[in-house]
Amino acid sequence: MGKDYYKILGIPSGANEDEIKKAYRKMALKYHPDKNKEPNAEEKFKEIAEAYDVLSDPKKRGLYDQYGEEAAAPLGPSVALTQMTWMWMKMRTHLALSAVLASMG
Image 1: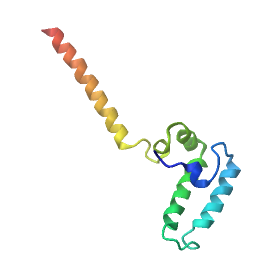
Image 2: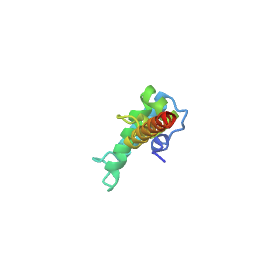
Image 3: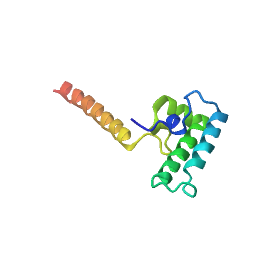
Image 4: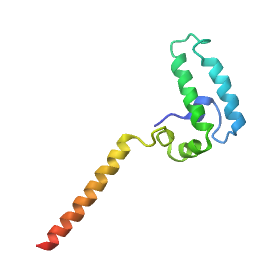
């Protein structure tokens, strides 16, 4: 399962733009590496920024809500999904070619 951006910011999935921005500012201040010296603060801060980047953009948020984390990523769906699609297309082509060759004799 991917990251839950709503959980990262501590907001409900129906949060509006103002609630998202307010939660982001609160969490970013709490985990900013210059203010928080915990070992995981920088990683948490990056995670918060990523969540805000997606949830504050209506288009990315819509994709995230519908398809999850990978759909909202900068490069779109993962390479694994692309490879699966490619393999499926090759398999369909192979099956079609096999049917044509079989009908020829």
